[in-house]
Length: 124
Image 1 (tube, rainbow, N blue to C red):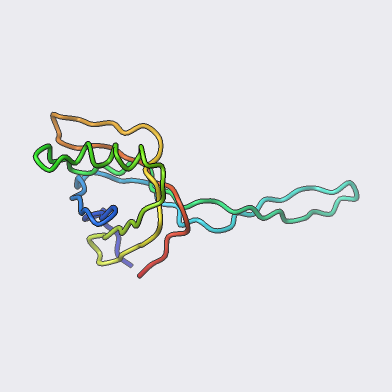
Image 2 (tube, one colour):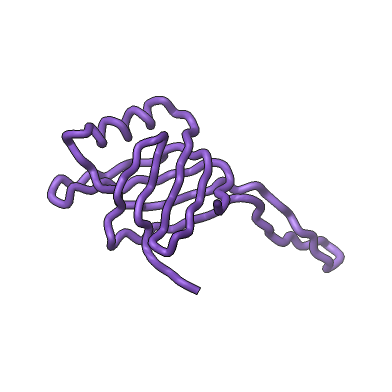
């Protein structure tokens, strides 16, 4: 078993390097189970669909390429786009996702923390 950070992320065909110290949470999406109690002491399993998520990924922003504007344009469109996440271990996950929530840009570090959510992520 190997672990390691995200090497790069490709969003709608544009590849971004990811800050080495970025440690975002990943949820593959699919079903989530919870237990509900019944009056007779038995229980039942309730399944709900949950979206995929990548929370707090710090991508490297190049002002000359217009990266910050590209991300904002994606948010303004409000649509799912193709996303591919490559880890240093060689693992690659793919899905249709949207840029969600607030994006924080740090000019000092030339990074922007973004959040993605969408359909189920699958390993390629």
